[in-house]
Length: 519
Image (cartoon, rainbow, N blue to C red; front, side):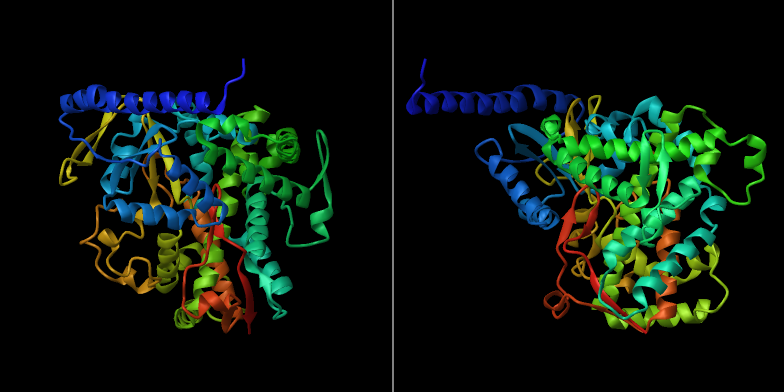
C-alpha cells in the first residue's frame, strides 16, 4: 500500500497530538499530584514547539560550530531561572545551574542519582572503571584507586620535571610559533603514562614516540596509542550527544582504536603482573600500575582502571594549560605579575626545583589557575538520572524558591560552565578574567558549590591534586624561561573576546592555541 503525502501529514499530525497530549496528561495528572505529596511546587517549563525540536537542532548546530557552551549560557539567560524543565525530542529534561540543587544531586542526595547511560556509552573503551560504574562497583573502584592518589604519591615531581623540560627546551625555546595545545596534550599523556605505567609514551620526542611496545596482540607505538585514544574519545563524545540513540554511533575505526588502546595498556599490565613482588619492592619510585597489582591480579580490572584514570588525566590538564596560556598572552599585565611572583618564590631557571608544598603556597599562581578553572571547568556539562523519587531544595513556585519534585527516571542536566559564569552568583564581571577576585571575600557567594571545577561530593575527581600540581609546575617553568607569551589570535586578542571552545568529553580551545614563547 502506498501512502501519499497528505496521508503521511495526517498520520504525523496525529502522532504529534498524541505526544503533546501525553506530556500534558503526564505533567498535570501524574507529575503534579506526586510533587504535592512531597511538598514541592512546579518548576518553570520551557516549551519549544514542536517537541523541543528547535532546541535539539540549535544544540547540534552549536556543537558543530564549537559554540555549544555559549548557546547553553544564552539559553539560561533567556529563561531567567537557574532551574527549569525543557522539552527535548519529546522528553522532559530538568536543567539546573543552581548550586544548592547541584549540591543535592552530587552530595546530600547522592544515592538518589545514577550516571544514566554513561556505562553503556563508554564501556567499549573504558570497560568497568571508576568513571563508568555506579553503586557497589564504583565504591570498590574508589577504594582501590584512592590510595594511589595520596599527597605522598602526587608530590613526587621528578618525572614531571623531565617531560616539562623536554617540551620547553625542544619546542618552546626556538621562538617559533607552536600550537601550545597540541604540545600540552603530548606533555600530559607523557607524564600520565609515566606515572601510571612507569614508562612514557614519549610523544614529545619524535624518535622515541616511534618505538614500539610488544603488546599481547601486536606491537604498538606511543604515537599510535595517542592517536587511537584521541579518536576513541572523539567518538564517545558524539555518543554522549546522541543521548538515548547512542548505540547508533559506531564505526569500524572506533573498534580498532579501542583494540589499539587495550593492547597498549595490556603490555604494561602483564609486565607488572609478571614482576616478582620482591623486585618490585626494591623499585626506587612510585608506579601506579605496580601498586594496583598488589590489590588485584585481574588484568582486565587493572587495564580498565588505568584507562579511566588516563582519560581524566590527559585532556583536563592539557585544557587547563591551554586556556591559561591564552589568558597570559591576552593579559600581559597578569603574566608580568605572575612571572614576578614566580621568580621571587622559586628563583630563575637554574634554581632548586620547586616542591609540591611551595607550588601550593604561591598565591598569584594559584589565583590564576583558579580563575581559569572558573571560566573553563574541566567538565563543563554533565548529567545524572534519578533512580528514586526525590526532590531538589529550590527552583519551584512563582518565585522559584520552593522545592521541586524529581521523579524516578528523570534526566537532570547541569552545567558548571554556566553556573561559574552566572552574574547572579559572581557579579557583573562574571565572564571577565580577573584572578585578583580570589583575594576578595566570598561570603556573599553561595555555599561553596558555586565553584566545582573538579565536580563535587563523593565522585569528586580523585586526581585533581595531580592535575593542579602538573599545571602549576609547568607554569612555573614557563615563567622562569620566558619574558612574555605572544598568542597569535589577533582578532580575539585585540578585544580580549572569548576563544571558541570545542566541547567533546572535555573542553578545549577550538583551533588550538597558536603561540610564541619569547625569552
